[in-house]
Length: 542
Ligand code: 3UK
Image 1: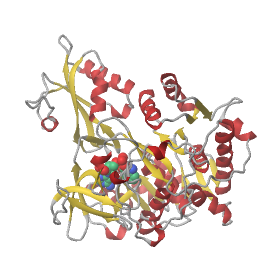
Image 2: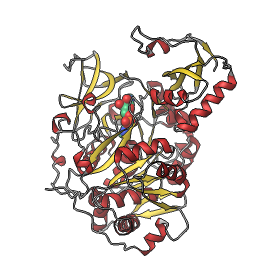
Image 3: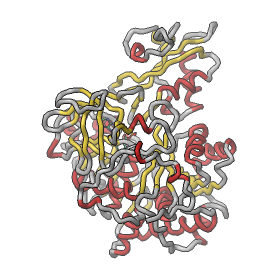
């Protein structure tokens, strides 16, 4: 089956076959046809089966059926093709808080054979510019409320030449164009291995990488973990906090409910208080959020005891046994833990409520294989610490990035996590094998924060590490060497924190700053990060 892409950028920048992982299609349900557009399966199929009137997406004050979503996404697909000039294979940047319109835009891009590039709402122009340049993105559909940073990006790079705004008045708004567009659209007949999604990960160095996912990958993740572990039904109501630009959110809040004809509740803001209220108000039954959020809402967990909430999924960072216990105490519900990764698209080690082992992430999800290996790539004996390696129907494909060979070795995906497997095949998370800081579920690359700090004139040198924190898992801590004559005081701490928030997404700012006279380095001049994680180094100013 030839590609349907006219713009072959994605195909031309796939890693060479020898650098890609091996793909496993052992489960009978993973035998995909050569021609596959995942929008047919997730959306249009429900109308063809007579379920167009079932509720698909709810949000405060809004409810869309599957027929409503099809109508909107068909109109947007027509706008993309006829007003904006999109051809199959073009990338489209999507920018909005979790909302029904964001989902309609996502399906419009997929239907038109494009590649969806969803972005975190908090990203600033600098970060959006890297995404636009790496993905060669010329089109954007953007919520007017988030337009400013994107318009700033467009000034900085000539690539981004066509931005269409929604939630906006005016004759050129997406809504105005949709009103004139046809609600009929014939989905582009993409190949099952045509790319439909670029999911960005900031990785360890702060230079973002695009992971490329095919139409068949989208269906594969719907057919592995959800039916075998989550086991939700068409009557379930999904809800949660992760942004749809994060594949944890895309899967849990869009792909998985729609794969089974269920409904999803999308919240633009999902603070602990808002999440609790929404779970109750919408009668949600399946919850997706990170361990930090479970800890934050547990004190109000009793308010959920008379609601239909029945399944709670935790991912994004390690789930401490104490958080599992806390949540069970508060709600009576056993958390479903799962480790996923942007490179793998979704969860590949997990367990259901009946097969919990305290402190363990779970076992390899049906469809995936997992093992723990040593530095030479040999599988280690149960009980031994090593690197996690996984294979399945999905896997890592970085867009034109030399780091592909670090993530994929001998056909296996190495996630960068240190794990121990027990004799029964349960996997126990130990640590990251690199310097990625994971704070409150966000991935923060130490060098990126360092780079931002270094731009302040008072800073001579700095090093950023993650330090353990009971609330957020880790927090960002900066060790700063100030230039001579600069004041080492609270005011300087605040100045530097505010400065970082202005340059990169505010969640990346260093919550703790310690001033030091010099940084620990090896004789060859390499920074020794591990020494900064030792307590009592330097004077603490925060
Ligand atoms: C860490 C976990 C222990 C781990 C993700 C579910 O988190 C997701 O993707 P990212 O690319 O980060 C991947 C890394 O995060 N991690 C995630 N979940 C767990 N560590 N226990 C867990 N349950 O270091 C992993 O390598 O941001 C999670 C679904 C889709 C995702 N993209």
